[in-house]
Image (cartoon, rainbow, N blue to C red; front, top):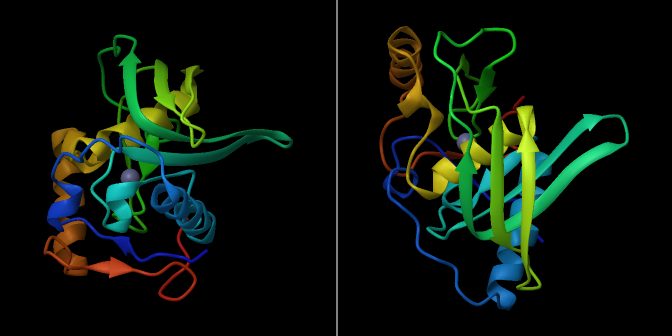
Length: 188
Ligand code: ZN
């Protein structure tokens, strides 16, 4: 297993829809093992294959809701359904999210409260998870990555401007930029 470099916003792999995985073979299993290690090293609660430069439709997640209550898994070729999103500005405190491909930044974003994930696991078996709250948010965030969408693309105008400013300040927004968890910086 290996910690992989995480691609930063601006690289085409993050802004292009990913391809279906299809059959789960050893290459896919190795990729997932490396992605899990990379997600823990970052650390983050989710990671999609395009974020490690691989344009495939799969993501991993690991989120400890409360001590001892851990939501974790891998979704291969997922589908996602979400509940209608309520209208109104996103709350700074309760609706701020971050992304390992915009390291160090957080912005509030309104998401659907509920989501239904349907995908296959590494054993190739289909599964469904009905998620609410933060887990539903993780699924929406990671699923977006597979369609070439970053949460920065969905921000309200003022926050989108702040995000664009951060991208400029950090010299991101160009192909080829990445960071290596555990080496380059510790990311929250
Ligand atoms: Zn992300």
